[in-house]
Image (cartoon, rainbow, N blue to C red; front, side, top):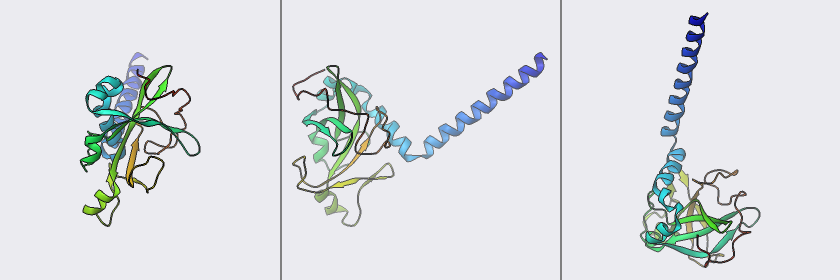
Length: 183
């Protein structure tokens, strides 16, 4: 009887390890999962907003609410990255935070490239990152900036609409009282 249990346990462990290996392999083959993981690695230090500021990120606008439901949160933008015309998963142009209980919490990132600069080098195609086509926002727009392409990656806060959706119904601007609020 003991041998039978041991054999069953060994088979269960082997099946679990095979399933885990398949999930790891699938994640490695899935560029969307890889991009989200790259974002987590690249931005882990920026849970501390002071470190984000030292890295060149600064508050931009206020808390961005969605046109229907949800929000993007408070953006901290790195102007050098916005103006370098490079889409680098390790250097997101913006970090997104939510102010809750007096503390800024990192939600994810936004990659941004100005449309005019992109199309000067790539006249026929929209930019992509991690296998995702970036979303176009024309000008004039509510942000007061030139037409641009953007891709959100909700690496730190789950989004019911998907990892790359613009708006997150789990994010709110209700506690936001102004840019001067610091963690």
